[in-house]
Image (cartoon, rainbow, N blue to C red):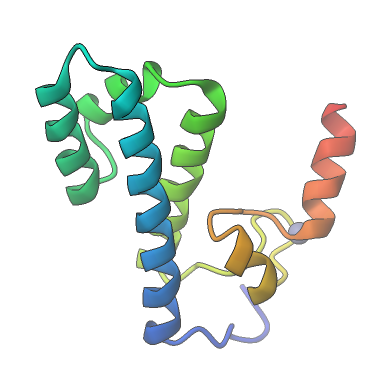
Length: 124
Ligand SMILES: [Zn+2]
């Protein structure tokens, strides 16, 4: 599909995966601080999220979050899946490379800067 292979080595992908996992843990931790009532459950969920991205447990947990955090977490999980499938680093809309600088700051973004701007203009 792509004319040239993106030069992502396994080492590169691991680096970005680490960023994503760290950010995901941060969100999960932050959310667990808000929910003091069910501490044990959150510990289980944090464990669960660390193990696998998808489960009904995770989905229930996602429903209890704010939209922004939920969206970010979904983006992070989607990005982790793209890393697994070696599809990471290209824009989902135009298929061009997103750019490592951008991914360094927003490792979960599925769009290049141009497409994101377009999407924002469209929805505004
Ligand atoms: Zn794009």
